[in-house]
Amino acid sequence: MEAGQNWEVRMQRLMSIGQFSQLVGLSVSALRFYADLGLLRPVQVDQDSGYRYYAPEQLAVGQRVAALRRLELPLDELSRLLDADAAQSRLILERHEQRLHQRFELQRQHLQDVGALLSGQRSLPEVETAYRQWPDQWVLSLTGAAPTETFDTFYRETLSELRRQAGSAVSGDDFGLYHADEYLGGPLQVEVCLPVQATMPVTGLAVTGQVRLLQLPACRVICALHREDWRTFGLTYAALYKAASQADLKTGASYTLSRPEGSELGFLLH
Image (cartoon, rainbow, N blue to C red; front, side, top):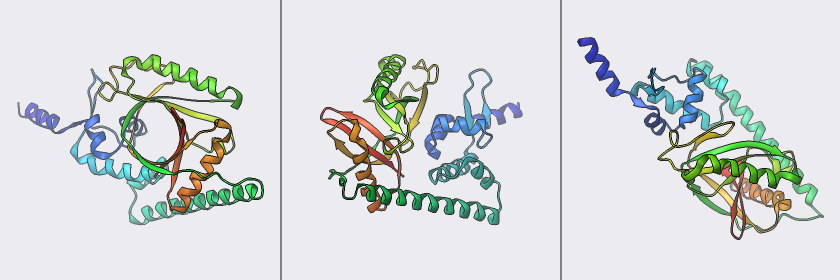
């Protein structure tokens, strides 16, 4: 009886994966991914439902993982850091600091090179830069790539598939995320995202194939309205990147969002 009471008390203290997600600042999909890697495993998994539960003692580790991932620390180094002593932790962080410095210098050099190429030919457009806050949101997403000449058709067909799977759960306008400098050169690879209702993130959606259900955290963005077609997206992105760099802001993925008056282009800010 005492063992049964202890088990019941323990279960009352455990948190669902959704509760744990909100408290540590990691998405549910990220927690599942980290559990699969053995990085942050739940203490209890219901064998019948598959529901995952976390203990209060794991909050500190979860919050540390979230903080380190925001710093873009690679997963393999993050895993070593969690078990490292003070000296090893310093070496890992110093190595990552050096990597970030190198990346920053490379991006700054790319910006200077682009400016040199445009000098005497054409200048970056004057854009009305704006900053706004994206809310925390659930999205269905599908990543793919297409040649420039067929990209518009690819995007529309991908969006149609997402709308089919979301059904009545659609909660906002679609947008495209670009995790590299596609519009500044390179293949057009996009993650098409469709916001869906947070009240039915799992059981209410028929997620199949390569479609993923993600919870995107709230973030700040720098953006501008682009009134021309996609062929000149690169110039607006370059102007936005320059504005962010001059403001000493660190940019992440770029995005496109359709507006009645044109296309909103922007960068997610770290």
